[in-house]
Every structure is written in C-alpha cells, then in structure tokens.
Image (cartoon, rainbow, N blue to C red):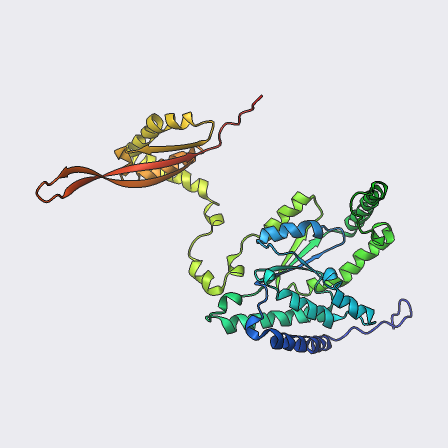
Length: 401
C-alpha cells in the first residue's frame, strides 16, 4: 500500500526472479538459433552500440554521424520499425502482446544478417529489466563463441565482442522545447504539402503538439529506457553524450567519447603484439618541445655541421621552394655531400619543421658506370646518392576576378 495515495502499488519483481524469467525466455530462443543456423553460423556483430536518447535529443540526426565515426555502413536497427514488420503485425492482429520473448527473437535473427557483421547500432533495446538480463546472456554466448573458435578457420567470424552504450542526454526543459519545435515545423511542412500536393507528409506525433504530453514522454523515457541503459553502465562501455548544444557541438562530444581505443577493439593477442608501438596522439603531445630541444642540441654540439645544413637550405633549397609558393608543394633533388654526413638529414628535416614546412626526404642510390674492363667485360660503377625531398606548406590563395 502506498501511504501517499492509499492505492496498492505493484510489488517490484525481485532481481533473482527477473533473471530466471530472462533465462526462461533466452534459452529456447538460443537453442532454436543453433538448430536453425548451426553453431558455426551464429555470427553476431563484432560491435553492438546501444543508442538511447531523450525525446528531441537528436538520435535521428546523430545516428548517421556515429555510424561514420565507427566506420559502419549498415543501417541502424530501430526496434520500433523492426516490430512493425508483417510478422509482428500478425502477432498483434491475433490479439497477442509483443513481449520480451518476441522482441528478443526478432532482434537476434536481425543481428545475424551479414550486413551487421562488423557492427550494428541498436536503437530502442533494451527497454525492460528482462531485456537487460537477456542482453547480458547474449554477450556471454558471443564471448563463448569467440573463445571456442579462436585459432580455427572460423576465427575471423568470431572476434572478441564489444558492446557499448551511447546515451544522448538533454534535460527536460530542452526536450520539451525541441519536441514542440518539431511539432510546429512538422505542421507547417504538412500544410504546405497539402496545399501544393508535392512532397511527403511527415508523421504528426501528439506529444509534439501538447506540452503536458511532451513532458510525460520525457519522464517515461527516463523511467524506462534510460534506467535500463544505466543499469548496464558497470557491465559494458558507457558513453554519456551532452546533446544540449548545436549539432556541431554534439558531434565534437561524440568524437571525444569515441577516440580510438585499441585495447577495446582489438583482440587481446593482437593488442599485445602492437602495444610497444606509440600512438600518434602520444608522440605529438610534446612534439614541439622535443623539436626545440633537438635544434638547440644541434647548435650546442654540432655548430659547424648545423651551419652548413642551414646554408644549404638557404642558398639552394629555399629559392626553389619560393618559386612554388602558389602551390605549396615542391619536389627537389639534391646531391649535396653535406646531407650524407651523420645527423645532417635529421637537422635538415627538423629545420623545415621549425619553420612551418612538412619535409620528407627519400635517399636514392644510383649506380653510375665509370669504367669497363675490356678483357672481362666487367663494368665498374660508383654509387651516387640523390636526396629526393618533398616539401609541403600552405600555398597562396588566389582570388580570380
């Protein structure tokens, strides 16, 4: 009994009961998949991104951006659309509810489609506690398959699974404002379509025209979908995205959350083999300070050679570079012997870097015939070193009238 209103409050199901219910649902669905496809063909996505967002948070807008960020070309799996198929309509027409069992069955078969092999964005799942438990069971099964097929010819189809949660969050005030704005824009759009007869009508949601309904929709979302996703926060990788700002600001927030994490995405053995190599983001952090340190070291420890390299650049290289000021790209060959001395090439590249250029040097060794032994026919050659340099910089912007 709720003492605040005198009404009977349904008892909250015990966690153990919910897990038991989930197992009762999940086990026969999984067994049916094994019987139908065969265990070696239960090839689920390498990565599953669970996408949740408050009404008006911009899921429709940002889903495509998240797909590009993760390199996914497949369309997102939207549960509301998946449950609106002819098969699901038959269930509803027969007077049955679409419960957790039906949701899970149709979802798992969708995830097995080849286009989702590398990854899938999942919108609208899980929504209930039972669905949350079923998701955990799916992850356990995917992990079992990865371990089982590791080192076999099928291993490439069973990579280490990754499940990530993305929550696009806006507060209630912003959500209501965006829902009502969408309603006004939809109404204006549809009125123009009806007037002109050209175009496609947009769906008009009741919640987009009534502030009270919009507010209720936001609260239902927080109590159901949001709570379901939050319950997985300690189980899977979780990204809470601030979606209050402009589209560009939200995209930057998404990029910040999805910075490359090789330890998360690579197989552990692959990651262990590569981990000794530094990330690009690590080596650029102190790149300027390291450059200054090296240049000062050249001046202090090798001033004579340093001056000769500076002179070479000043007298022979820069005149050519300046003739390419419009394009910002110069290819220069040099046979100057100073470049063959120890540390000279490093000085050469560092000097250009300090002055704001990008310089790349490739050493080509060319054999030049010098003499021929007439008795044996043997040709004696000397090796000529040619230093082929590519120098890039921001070229001039020309305005044409």
